Length: 275
Image 1: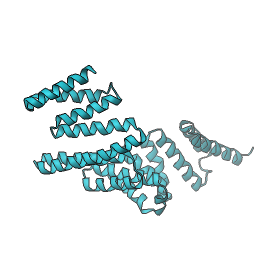
Image 2 (image 1 turned 90 degrees about the vertical axis):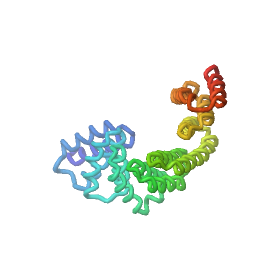
Image 3 (image 1 turned 45 degrees about the vertical axis):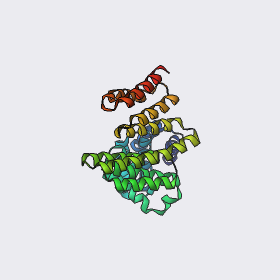
């Protein structure tokens, strides 16, 4: 076997490891190829190797290392998939303006619209980035786009989180009218999400939705409804610590509500504790 044949075999082994999900093995094989054949590899092949080793690091959750190779590849090749992974790396590393830059580049490429899963992830990623930089209107816009692209419970939850953030911001500004309005919007979207949870028997999402709903009712001082939400969680997950901690928080609020409601709450809470 001559040197060229050995090089081609080494590359084939590298790609085989990647497609088999052996990402650590792929990285090791990449290092062998670069060490043995550096200076002999065509530029286009180096670019391809860089892209795939970047994906190996990405799949292993090593986003800084992934960026090193994806950025190198991006200098020579325009590839919407590379932009997609760059954006996701920056999202994981909390570099939100760069996240937005590369996800927006993805949206400018018509090919992304053919893959609903990728498009949904791009729109959701933009929503998360805008939420983190407190641009709530744009966050809502992209989360709603994601919901229209592919209905998913996470989109309902993310939209509710935007309304919660808006409510907290309005409360800071002492604008109680808009606080209640934002929380009601959050409640409405989560109730729609509950229908999807029931449809797909999704217990994990069911618990997430009721947790957020309960926390909204706590923020509105509606302790009875909050308690009912945490009670629903315990029907699915009896040992859910978050639900029990929130019940304890309701106990602490007993002194701030009238006697009749406090007695009702105490009775219901005792029933829960003894269930």
